[in-house]
Image 1 (cartoon, one colour):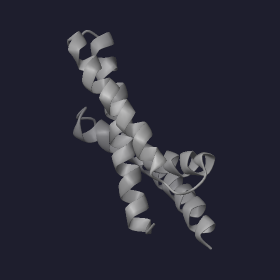
Image 2 (cartoon, rainbow, N blue to C red; image 1 turned 60 degrees about the horizontal axis):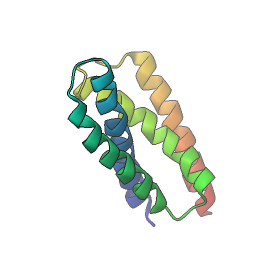
Image 3 (cartoon, rainbow, N blue to C red; image 1 turned 120 degrees about the vertical axis):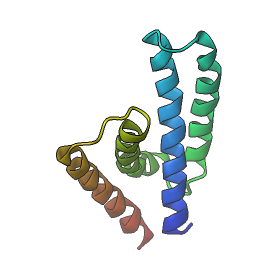
Length: 109
């Protein structure tokens, strides 16, 4: 699997996981109706299925995915919640993505 395909799958996986957790959060905070739990469950099922498409061992996939998750969560913060990430957020995300690259590229050699 190419690095671009791996990264794209990780981004889609992160969006599915964040949406699947954000919708119940909205419901629990009283900002959404109970019906949002249905698409939330579907998003979490999609999240799990997308993780299975990665060819590496599950533990390695979860570790590498974590870096992408951090970056996508900060994009979500900005685009969905309207809060611009700080310099510290961006720096931490860059460190997490570097860790992800080390894991992914190290297993390809």
